[in-house]
Image (cartoon, rainbow, N blue to C red):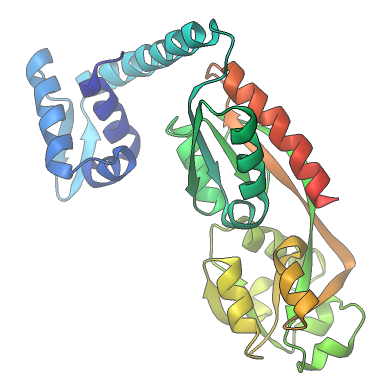
Length: 300
């Protein structure tokens, strides 16, 4: 129900980029520019300062943003409340998940939820934990599932389940014959790690620091953006990686990789995040409870 021009303006103001807003909205950049131009003509005021490849809000733009957030929030709440009066869960459910969760834990949860609520249209965005946090904070996602508690004060974090991280190596790697491995034993071997912004990377860096090993002192030979890429590279024998236990079950059973528990054990919590101030629909609340129960059972 909300004015489309206002929705586009809100996305541009949050992203501070016409190009990024176009990606988020699945629009072309000229279409985004046209909507902003129309809104500026409506108010007879410039809403963005443009120059040197950057944009910023004008004083008028600041005012419009404050009201846009209220209007868009109320519009969404109105549609949700009326839809829920029918007694059936329906409509879009915008979920974001970090790579590990999206690839290995969430698919069966989404499938079972869809089977129980066929009128719900779940849309999943996959990115690293930092990117998902930002999208939830910008209200372009209803809820996020990430690999660490949120760093953003605008978000609430709810612990979902535990997840053990283990060292993986190729069967012929020198570490493969061990029953478990300590951080100090890993220092001398090449290390294949996740990229900056990944929840797994953040958590393993913290683990090494607590063990008295600065991450810069590790022999990092490669940074990769997904668990599948990590497993593929480690399988060549080039080095070790630290990865969620649930992501390597198939390769371990087939004998393609060896998984070694860390000593002390490295266990993190997977978290649900959502905006503090945003109205949470019955659909979102139902999915949260459903997902928590399913993920806890799967992790166990």
